[in-house]
Length: 306
Image (cartoon, rainbow, N blue to C red; front, side, top):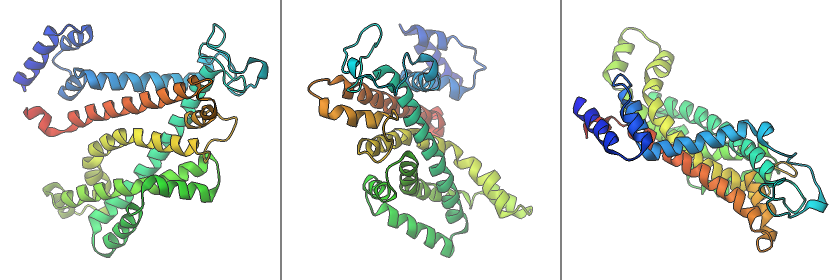
């Protein structure tokens, strides 16, 4: 371990990056996983992108210069200027304000979907993997049925049946997205239920509920966190796609996918109306992917054997 940390410290001190030089000089008492994460430029970039966008979304009421839903036809399609830094859309609404409030809608919707998906998947995967038998056959049959359909197409069908609205988009995404998680979690639980610490807990009289919550769930937490971080980008893309099709947020609610749809007819006249929300989606997906890669490397036990 000391050799590994020494190589990391030496590489950081030889680097021209002031951030890496500062991090390499941090005390050795820092947890080794945190130290490795903070000395990875890609992980730091992903963390920075996600932190900036999330902060901007939370501070949208303070940062937004104008009301994102205020219509003013005399100011429609203004180019960027001092009053409207990113210009206005076809209804005279401030693009910057709509991007900031759209971040709240997009990220908030994706976060709720992710929490629901993780809850369902952990419950189904743990029960299926721990008990096995007919329950496993029944639950995995349902998972196989859902995975037999293309996820996004099935989500479009569900959202279209339920009708337009953000709540219906969240229901559609959550109803489709949990299946893949559940299968992976089941595989992890199958390998854990025969481990020595589970057998020891069972031998001293621990209930199945306690074993699943205290012993099994604790050991699948790391992989689930990494998977959720990596999949956050896909969920954002899926939600934005449904909103782009008009199945989600309805006017005048600002949302990045809906903003792309608003700018589509004006692509040649005002391409910035699609450029801004498209760039925002690209950046946040890139940020979560880089952050997820960094967490995966940190939580992988073989990382410290290299």
